[in-house]
Image (cartoon, rainbow, N blue to C red; front, top):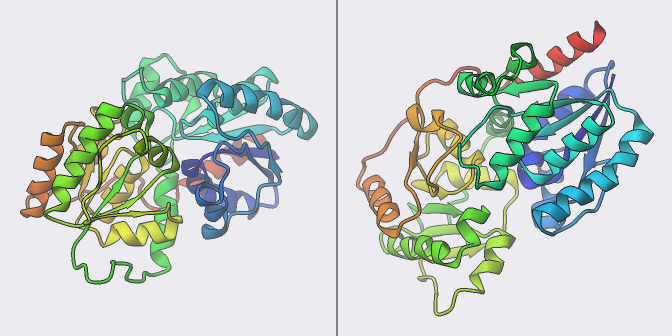
Length: 358
């Protein structure tokens, strides 16, 4: 069975790691890893392959930076001949980034079966590029691997056939549990007993100057009560230069993007996390660390109803209030989650092997 795993951005690298390892352990699977080059610098790409012990991609399309349309078109154009030359039985895509949509479109045009990992997630905000990407991927995929019953219901409401849907759990939790097994070092900054962590990268958050200023003013306010560690995404760093007359308090510590293991160690010991990331909503819940999601909606609703996540929006007042509540000891704790057992990747591979053996 020939499988082609397609990755292109930081979230993809993390999620594909356990799946790639399980596939490589099976003698009945010939797996090729393709990197589209959507995230191309070392801080956002190479470091993750080394950190998570992922096989170096056999193929790199080298698409690079650009608009959504540029990246999607570039991946399709460069990936089609690769698929034709390799003739895989299945193309696997993860999440909702531009590379995943482009790979699914390329495979569909060539009548190659598609598996979508993390299918069925919906924020119901069609202004988000990620939302439109995941909807389109789901509707052309043959195997829809979901994390929970909510995702299943979303797909069924969109008239996707039940026999295409497989609830398997979350591959990101597989990665996290593997890191937890390795033990931890104390990565708290020198002299800090308590701190918060901030991440920002989504275009809805950082590309609008007024929205970004509102969030950063809140961060400055919060840093007067607790130091804030801010590993800054290249996109966000670029946008900060467009904000005139803004400076961070000296209690906001800007750092380069971190490798996955180092970052997990950092958030595990944090008082709370502020983020617009989807993955961090899950990771903080699994680690029982409070999370303030700086968005107006989320696709990961279970992390709110059963996890440590609070949806706080993008206003300075709401962010500061939510952070102050946690500093004062008012926080949520996680409940049990179905199929968060670290075995999602094994279930996915078994389903695929059973299907193709028939």
